[in-house]
Image 1 (spheres, one colour):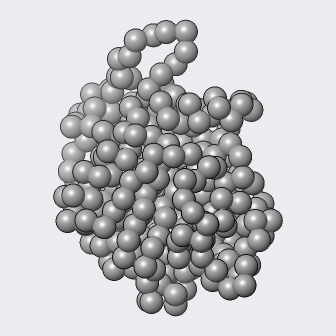
Image 2: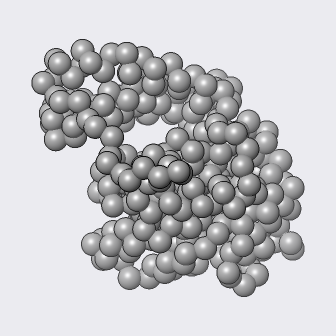
Length: 309
């Protein structure tokens, strides 16, 4: 994590980086808008929302929606009827709108806004959710107060893909191993080394150079629970996700990031993708029910606004 900066600097860095990254974001992170991606999103959502997912949510708000990976899948599956997607990055919302059109989704609204100052009336949504967003926000207490404010009584929150402090430290091992193994891996596959994006060098880094600066927090499970309860939410639960799958995924992504993308063969991509899915299922069945949640890379937070709140 980076040294502490002002909230304004943090928001500016996130805006600039995600605006530049938006056009290639889905390809870079292997975001899938097909049946496999939908199954992954629905599994995470069901784990956090429980049986309420079957009844669906008439109006939902996705915070920090990015290119729409989480929310568009839920809308396609009929879990959400009307979806409002927010992000601080105009570039990300433009990519999301393109994805929504290509998927034939019409009831999707995009709003460029800061998560800590949502421009919506009180009690507007039945579900407030996000994926891999909380660790970018400078003022978490203010953000959670906003989530609670716009949530209808008995409405739910769901935030997935948040890095745990222990899991983030453990992930440094496969990341470092990938950097050491990358030259041999590229030679074996006949892949050329990638070069960093060419950008004008000024007094401040810009665009892709800011990738290492946009992650502000990692979390202890109890910290996320306290944030939710402090905002007045109840039935708060934090769960851990992905251990073996995370190590496998970070190692392979670390290798791939060092090579020209078009040089990475199809067979390798299939191995990496299918191996990740297999280990994800193994984590879910054998490890997540039994190991401390703090060990896992991803944390999933859920909670409810009281019916009389």
